Length: 98
Image (cartoon, rainbow, N blue to C red):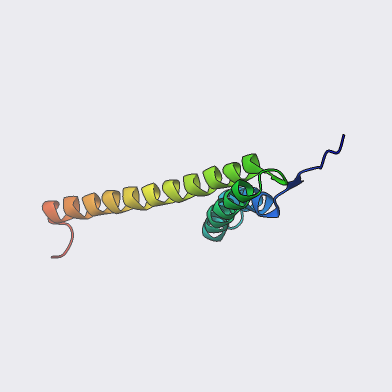
């Protein structure tokens, strides 16, 4: 019986590590790297399913990367809405200058 061992995609591992870094030390850069490397790794795994493994690692990196981007965008929108509403309230009360 001749079985070949599958190797884990380096891009998939990079994606997972960058996804974690996107939530900790490198918020924007880590998330973008996780997304790009995750998509590249999944494409590589689909092209060579008999020799390359690591789809779960790539998917984990993609999920972490996209969640970080979504949370960041929602946070920015909420800040803009909050401060926009605060400014409108102050103008309505006559406290802020026109």
